[in-house]
Length: 77
Image 1 (cartoon, rainbow, N blue to C red):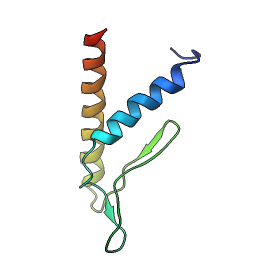
Image 2: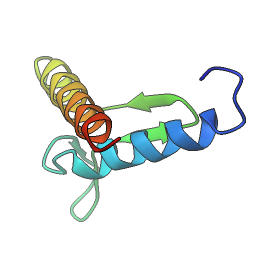
Image 3: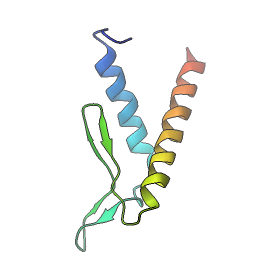
């Protein structure tokens, strides 16, 4: 679908659903009342982590959510 006018909208819809499905307990505490678990802009996603092993865990979970979402969407077509 590259070059299709709907490509950006479809990508944003899928990424948005994946991000909303991601566990908010992953991420970094910034002060007492603020937790950052994900950053997203255009086609880039950043998953901050407090420990070195956490980014791999978050990325793996994000990938799993996206694949599952895409597979369920294909089944509905």
